[in-house]
Image (cartoon, rainbow, N blue to C red):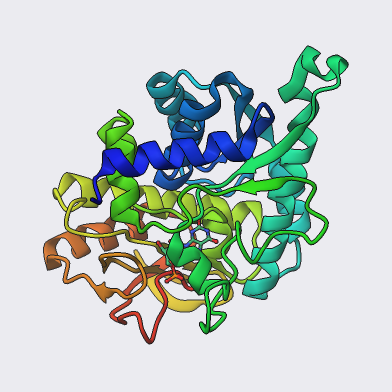
Length: 326
Ligand code: XMP
């Protein structure tokens, strides 16, 4: 029978068999999937798992602390943080094509994991230990939409599937590969992860890098991070977090429009709100948010975020839109 407890036990057993007495690292993104994957693998192989949080500079406000504090508090897992913002943002310079961005980000994640191996092993390295396994929180929909399923279209390369380099030196451990998000959440609860982690809304591994339409720069990241934190704050205080699946906030960095503030002309960027309702992210509907909430978000963003003079609402379902813009 499908119970979260049976599934968790079976997956833990499967990981034990695959990893044997080897060492593994798990990339944590701050999201539900990688947290649940890490907790499963920790049950299976204990402290031969080290979690690695790559700070790629594309996170939202407050996210790094959340991973460093909440996750470690909940699991007691070993965690190493890699500061890779300069590298990621450097590699993304001049890049505007969505798939190219995704591939660069996927590749740089792996390079960061490789670079962390000697720190992970510490003195075990001198006893000949190696890290052979990389744990990822890949879900069934990630596989399907990256063209990894049978007979499905290649829609976009999720960073942990289609974005992997060909010369990958790790064997992948992907215990959630056949599960949907709600099942992953159930397994996470079964493993005792707190609601702040399992209930979190999805956020893509490539982060704000795929929510800036156009080139990713530090200034643009700053603008988007600010707008995003306002939108999240207002959605939370309106009590809407449980109603929406997620709400990407997107910066149209190459678009400007004319506005007016005080008695002056402005020429700023639009921010797009993309609130969606969904069961599994394979299809989605745009969420009918209350006008009052939309108004508060719009007023605050245009008042508080420099260089943004317009807020627009995305009212497209998936299909034909995808949830993220890139
Ligand atoms: P799309 O944009 O394909 O998104 O409709 C479906 C769901 O997947 C998330 N997403 C990603 N998650 N790595 C991830 O971990 C990725 O590369 C990625 N791309 C999209 C998206 O936020 C939505 O929940």
